[in-house]
Image 1 (tube, rainbow, N blue to C red):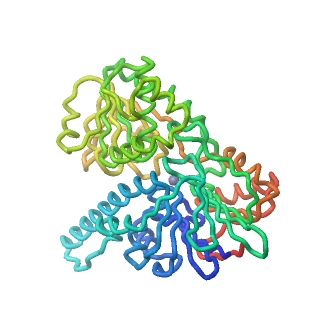
Image 2: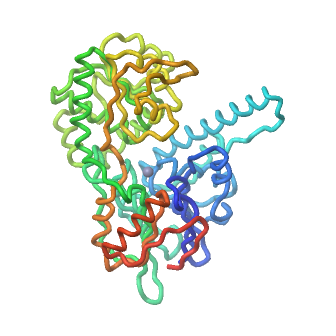
Length: 466
Ligand SMILES: [Zn+2]
């Protein structure tokens, strides 16, 4: 077997690893590179191999940086199966349609600008909504720990990764020279004690090679459950001031965790029963997928549902806002409320309206639940700049700003090391992907120090033999 590293090599997005086995080609993930426009443009249009020569795609989970160029792969000639868990397939459907819509809208905006400036150049979207719909035809769903053969003689098993709903890590297994050989691929490795999700499975097999993510190879996160107490305090303090809690959140995972926590806090009478608005169509759609896949909940979540005889992400105070009119009408609500909206870094989407309407009122709180990239509105809010620009207008920042830092869906340094510990002495080379290069270099040193003898940090277009 040959490993051909391509996407998410010394960077954190655009996951795409090419495996060559007996002259056939498989892609492990097929994700969108997210970065500056010019770089994203060429990176996302290049594949590790001509799409028509790819025999199958194995998907680890639905995040766009792992699935987001599938429509282009199909558009350029891929016709094989895309293997995913049922929850990943359901979620990817919504996410690719959303992504296709964004690609079309972005290009339309730029073309309009160009036209106004007298430029004749017209850009083409990376793919369209129609391309996204086309890609979904190639999905084949597979269950957890139910081995399947994407190629005759190559067996693959998917295991719970505990990262987002439907996420897996995988083991590829084949016979060679009379012995069983195995390649592991972590996808994005999750964490224990995440709300709703089951814990990641501990792999206990000898591997000939392992490709593992390294996003947080140098840092640890606070315990996920510490966030619950912080959320309770922020809501109570804001209600005491008769204010609103505005939460910018990513659509997948983070938003559902928050809604589930709010439901728990209300049922335990730890916060008042105030209206909760989820104002993001994608978040609403993803929440439907969460409700559909009860088989993936952990024991605590199943216990909560049984105790209160309700569904996950359903309670009287909770409203999934659909129309733009309804979204605007939230502003007329005078009492305390919680508003969860996208995008997570406050760059686009309905969150901008809620921030504009609420950021200059000192009774309100903007609650951040994820890291905010430099040069985003979210970062400027976290930095508590006295004025922020929203829709081209300057707004005085009077609202309180709070943050919950423990909600990451990725294993931190100690969690990665703990997961790797039982594999020590029975694993061939470890290949680090999905991390910034300086973090990978440090994590590699750590791994060598704790007794993993062979650790590589591959670059784009590097080949290795397994
Ligand atoms: Zn992910």
